[in-house]
Image 1 (spheres, rainbow, N blue to C red):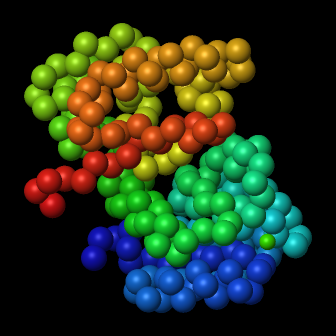
Image 2 (cartoon, rainbow, N blue to C red):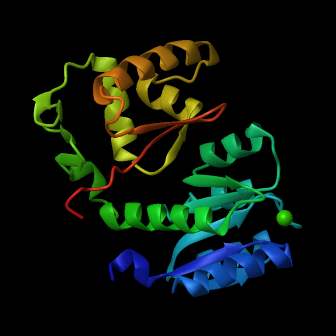
Image 3 (cartoon, rainbow, N blue to C red):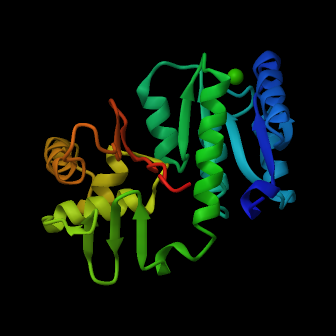
Length: 241
Ligand code: CA
């Protein structure tokens, strides 16, 4: 077991049925977990317990909005957060992701889907120990590789001819593999400013980047589109694993 899987998952959910469903699923998969039903109790756990390695957070809590919990937590920790939202509005998910959530699920969700997201979040945590992410010089994800020091990206050993903007986008997505990045976040990181009118150009750069890193129909799909929200770089399963 890796370090990331040794911790405790904090489930924050005021709906007893959903809380039990999540707790049972975590039990079945052998994850340690604790449950709370208010934002206040969640913040108390997060400030006093050091063993929490992942938070599964309902946005509609009785005392405070779940987004407020994420904002507070991000003041001192980068613990991954998977948001559960009963609301259909994309705006809620976007504000949660902008506040620093890593992923989201819309209720009703399947337990299998939640467990898959939990695995992704923990694997991402294991792959990026605190403080080490920026010093990593080589990124590998299936046939895709990036040498950050040389500023070169390759696919199956062949150098990709990327424009500076495409390369910046690729690096941002790669450094956040497994995490849903909102349009706002990407615009801020890559353009230095989040202007809504830049969204069409982001789409164009993303399309041209995709053509270069996903050339074959049958090949790996790296970039996942979250309509109305943003994009996520997926971890392509290692054929040797
Ligand atoms: Ca709720």
